[in-house]
Amino acid sequence: WFLRVKGKIQVLQSPAKFDLKALLSGRVHALLFRPGSTVKAHVPILMIEAFGMLIPHALSVNVEVVDWKVHPEDLVFAGKPL
Image (cartoon, rainbow, N blue to C red; front, side, top):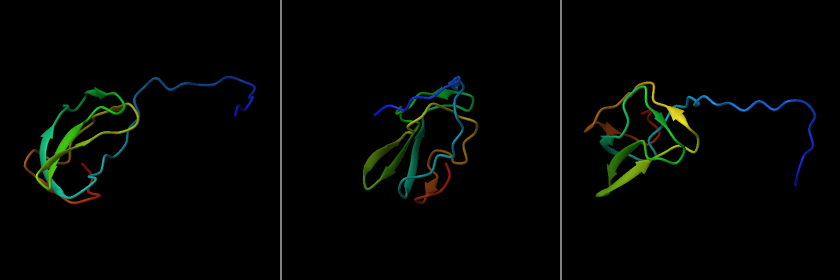
């Protein structure tokens, strides 16, 4: 399916800003990027240890890490902003 449109299409080149939230409860194992870093889509940004496994967290869009609200070894609950 295609939609025909008239006019200009603007493509955003700068990374988007999103709040990353924990997918499940566990302990933060590692923060893989420092604040100010640009992370490409689908690249793991941090790891949470839960159920004896390391669970990678990633976003489906390019983002810029502004700051972290958690530190390694912090306990997090599902839905908590990271």
